[in-house]
Length: 183
Image (cartoon, rainbow, N blue to C red; front, side, top):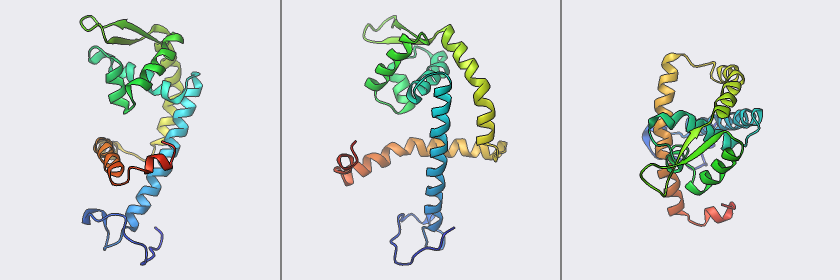
């Protein structure tokens, strides 16, 4: 941990996030989370590149594969799962269809929707990718035992679910921020 400058205002106010009245541990946690996020993004890009996809296409293919057994997997389900817009998922799914990795079929009862499925070529791609992913993921998460893995899963699900609320609050408190950063 770094030494906190007593003149620096607190970046959190919840007592559960302060240690002895300081947000130093919270700031260190954020630094670690951002660093790990960079590592995750880099490995995702390498996984995607291994099979000739963009990182977003890789995430969408993985999501369709994982979720298609839960019913009529469509654009909206993938978008909600990945926190992407439906329009963006539609564009990327069309690339996956063109590559022969995903198939689209009309929804049996709703003509406005499509049902997405991973093709046999997509399954072969995912199998080839898994051989590359396993040792990298094992290394990435090597410090975790079963108990800490379970705890991390619960914590990350909760943080992910709450993240959208925090972004909306930031937009409400300072709506011009999006424009300043090219969003």
